[in-house]
Picture 1 (spheres, rainbow, N blue to C red):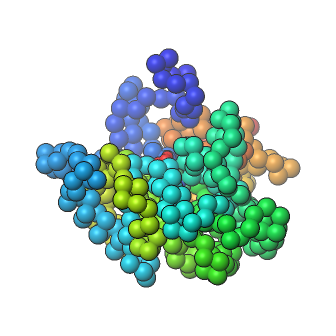
Picture 2: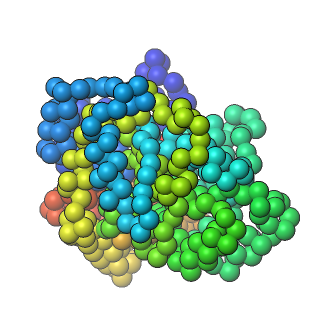
Length: 416
Ligand SMILES: Cc1ncc(COP(=O)(O)O)c(C=O)c1O
């Protein structure tokens, strides 16, 4: 339990109090060291206190700490949007706006698609996570705990099964559900957008079926529906490339950014087709802090580090290490609870299951505590909280990555 001065409705995964961090290691206030496979939940792809980002923050803080961009523009915002538009791997000219968080990016995207299409219905996916604000709550494909006790949520939102090799839902299953949706629930001409995570995060790192994604792209083109990719967790190198949508062979119309965009300083963005972004009245988009100069400076330093060569090297290092370990653990029957390796590239989840195939949620809880005691921080995911999501910084030193995987191995072997 944390201090009574803090709401008890915030759930704490690890009851430790952190003091400082360096790349993939953090220390608590008692001086205990942990290897960090959580990375602030996918925020620290470049690790804790990356020197280049720290320097950019320091430099910007001496120059201009804040100005509301909609009161008077400043260079860090302008430069970042220029750099981002070149960094997004799509063929069309990119425009966009900055936000304070991922949820705020999703909220703004909902407004943008309403303004652009004159329609309001949204199709999201089972297991999805897009935020904790009132409108994003309803996009989430999971009720407990997010949608509990908050009453009726803003809509209209409908959900489809998320097709993936990682959950057994096929492309045909999802297409069938889509056919039913448009024959039973909602007129397709009322649909403003589909919102997809190319690799679902909260659901346990499930990679979207490529055939479905391509069929969905064609469907949206035919029906004048906007396709939004939420890359808040899967973007900025997590899958070993700039964004996870590239592995689906599609170009989304809008892309939501957040988390690792700015090395730990709060920032989000909605970017995409210029024709979609200019339809709300002047003043319809903006915000006091969104695109704060310090956050923009941190993001510019992040982009400096994220060359394709770096992303490829980091992604390969982490993917090979995790895939290799998982295969060895399977061969050696390390634990009867070891299930599938989910995800794509370096965005991997390890499922824990019981002998009868049901989720081994109790064992995951046990694993979190064992690993923490042994000096490794892990993050749970999945509807039944039975999938470990591995979110170590991409810049983790090979030695520290191996040390973390050694601890994970020892703790998996101890599960009862
Ligand atoms: C895919 C995805 N979308 C949106 C969000 C919400 O971002 P934020 O917590 O910055 O509001 C998250 C956060 O976990 C996420 O993983």
